[in-house]
Image (cartoon, rainbow, N blue to C red; front, side, top):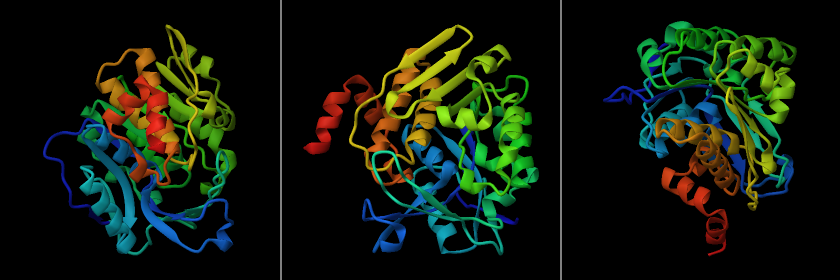
Length: 327
């Protein structure tokens, strides 16, 4: 991999996000099979694109570490992220591989099948440990690593190297997001073992109930093993935060669901933004839950990410916020 993005942060980042970036091609017709969809809209997508945009909109200086192709989709992604205030200097431009794409179908409230275009490999799976911004990873308060980054080599080695750079309690939080996407893995049976090793290097683990099941991880055992925070996402039933001091549960927020795909990424971004703001455990979880609910009401993923003001308003009065959707 060769060139890098051109937007360089003027100040050290508060967060580093290692994860895929891609072009999401989302249908403008809901409840329609892909073969019958007539029109699509393109958005920045992928864990890095979504969480990076979410953090930036919440006032967090963020660098995204990933890869794109030397093509129009790649330039669209880096320009869009830079326009959001994301530092794209960690996005490597591959000279020959094409930028990854993803199509989806919309069957609200809970069925959003994805069709990824990333095999046999794609730029974000080709980043290496040498591509990591070591100084930023060593000093940034927050670092996120996506589970999909472990799906193939050499990005698997880059993901482990990023976690190892954070070893010894560097920063405020080193976050492993389980981010289970079975269609993104050529060898999905490797997922549990890789996540067990990755979790041992993180101090915060985020995932849905289904993702913890797929990874073969138990939240209580992770806490006993020394992980400082475990966040369980229960979909429409809310979320839970486990720490050595106990468990806090947050109920679900009833919202009209348009697309649930980006909700977990918004949850992760708001959790990190809340940590930086020094929120107490109940407030951390309430704000993360609110951010996820907001994005579920919108079509896009990255473009749907809320500002911190929106998150605060939703967390304070969900009924009033939902009422604005009909206004």
